[in-house]
Length: 384
Image (cartoon, rainbow, N blue to C red; front, side, top):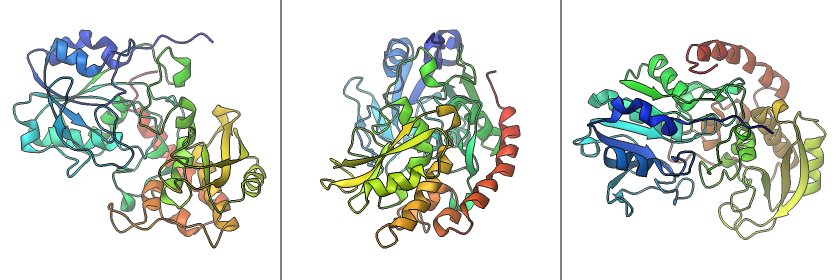
């Protein structure tokens, strides 16, 4: 396959020198913040400009914290710079964090899916910059899923949380730079926003059609294929079924000790869902749900990625689990996000958990909202 030469924001930063020169800079990043040569954005900005502070999203600046683990503030050993957590006791900027800074820069790879906390770290940072009067510069990166398709439902703001804070679809078809522009305008953040744009990318490109190297966006997204399925299988995070954490194929291998692997795979395959096939598997998670216990379940195999509607697949899986394992399957109770079960925060609605509509009617109901979002997002396209 001939791969498209693509340059992320960090690769073309020299063309935007005027934004960074003579500024005291705070940088929000993680291990995905690298250029095409895999040189760290931290090191690049630290060598060229006055980098004064680092800010850590979920999983930490160096990617050494598992999902949901609280990130502490500390001193970065490599640079000696202070690292302030945006995924701990506070997720917003404080006076102390921003003291002496002239500019906030963000460079993080997302995976094109609504329930990914990096999006809301970005949004909170933009809100903070607006509040404190500090410019915000985003080094844009490709959307691994491309930018021409959207999928899923639109989040009902009654269920907003740090895994879904704005009414956008599950698969939103925008780069983080484009999404930042949409958030800034449509949700009245109104910060002083600049985007360091991609070069060479177009909306039809999947990640593996570019010449970029994959760096895990978080510890349990090991491959680009994982990112394709995540929009559906992540729903299991709100249940007592393992989403495959503690295996070599998180969000592809799914199950629990009480699941009959062959029964579940046959039930899922009977629906002939486009773009995927299901295979019975057995696995023992090394951590997270059902750690150390043999689980039966399925592996989701991609057969035609252009046909996959991951969120709809995830809903079908939830309904099948509810039917086959009535006495065992459970939704997890509300957590720190508030009064709603965590599943509802992921799903952006309680209609799936309550099964308030038949599957077909539920899916058909997404169409009107998706069409409206498709028109809206077009106003914020930075790339053809």
